[in-house]
Image 1 (cartoon, rainbow, N blue to C red):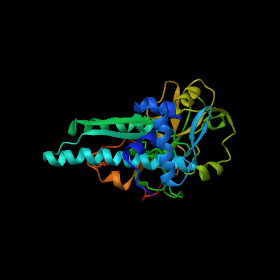
Image 2: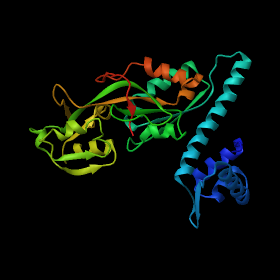
Image 3: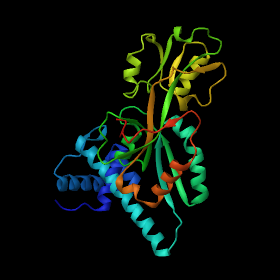
Image 4: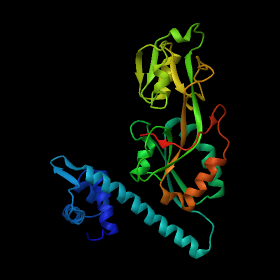
Length: 306
């Protein structure tokens, strides 16, 4: 197999992102025929069809998705190589460049701001870029595995196998609590407002053991929306702690007993990126910044959700 050139990797990533050779060519400042030729060359070198072609564009095959993920990670390491080499040549301890973070909404809202504040004060040339990712399927860990993020704040599953190429480190445990309309005399008797990210593998056994939990009357795609439904008196909900940090008016919270369900939360990255100066600086701040009240100590290392 012939080696792949960086430009070939960039074309592969652009087609996977754009969904067509024409759109990828526009993004790259190239032509459709040049992009098509490059993709055929890469396919020949790799010995696999990477995209299905059709009137609606180009869709990655399973092999194409895997190749694009590797390409993104390789290109990111090449960018890091250039940045850190220049820093070393200048003898500078200043850390610069982009820092891509994926996080689920409540962690991005309540965990990351003080971390990024401390990081920006120490390293003002860093450029954090945060994307909100729902913790469904491969979640934020999948963003890291696919090369779209350098680090993900993820829910971690003790029973799961770690995603290939990704390492996970726990930060804390997040307990669940029951939320209900303020003034309700028997919250557990209310209909359930479900949240699609709620019953992951980390809480499934506890959930099944609770014979008082009714079938859901309403299902919400977002935790903030679920809380707004509770505020309007449409039912109660069982949600993780960070989602309940800033309760809306007319919503009350109560514990779920001495042993409430919990989920593990930590960060995921790749072994290669974990050794870069930008990631080391971010991880130091994540581990040293005081956590919001109500969170519990971390358990030993587990696998990332997904």
